[in-house]
Amino acid sequence: MLTVRGLHKSYVTPQGALAVLKGVDLTLETGSSLALLGESGSGKSTLLHLIAALDEVDAGEIWLDGISMTGLSETKRAALRREKLGIVFQQLNLIPSLTVHDNLEFHARITGRFDTAWQNELVERLGLKCLTDRYPEQLSGGQQQRVAVGGALAARPRLLLADEPTGNLDEATGDEVLNLALDLVHATGCAFLMATHSHRLAKRLDRQVTLTSGVLATS
Image (cartoon, rainbow, N blue to C red; front, side, top):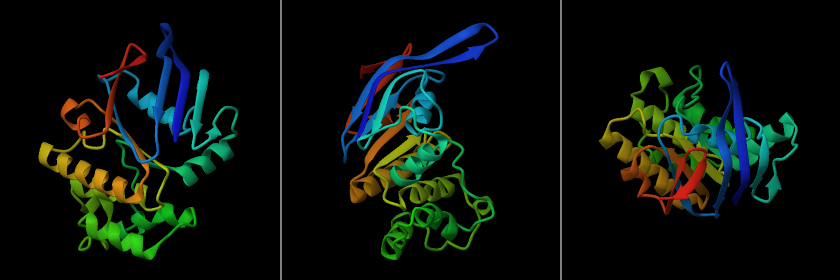
């Protein structure tokens, strides 16, 4: 499902070039889950942004569902995100002017893969049945996170990317959100890559790797 080979990424700083990724190799099979561990600033978010085609690599290859991202135009990268990916980043990116119901439907609608039965199942599983007419600002952090997970999975993506999806939640709520995410990933059969600093949560996934000094090591 996902293959990353020899990935390098640097950023320009006032002190000169800062190498964040220094030859990252990674594979993830369909239906499997992988936790990406690392301290703050280790490059976890950078790696996820590159896989999500939100930024371009300096060197190396990323293959997503058999498609190479090398040299793709921004239009084609955007199409790849829509068609293949579900994304839950720390900012959540819920649309404040849309209700929970419409936020959940949004991605599935624009990809042409809206399914009423699956939508209803998501609402039920995520415990949002009584909240569908509310707006994001009227929800708790945990409820917003559930909506973000549901929206990311509504179009049945091939790969779900999550960057510290429980980082702003208390432990009990974070566990609940991860339980729901893993349950829904299992239901759709998609691959799941989660960046986290929590070894406890990482152990819930099939495999764990750690990003240190720009390279990956098996945990």
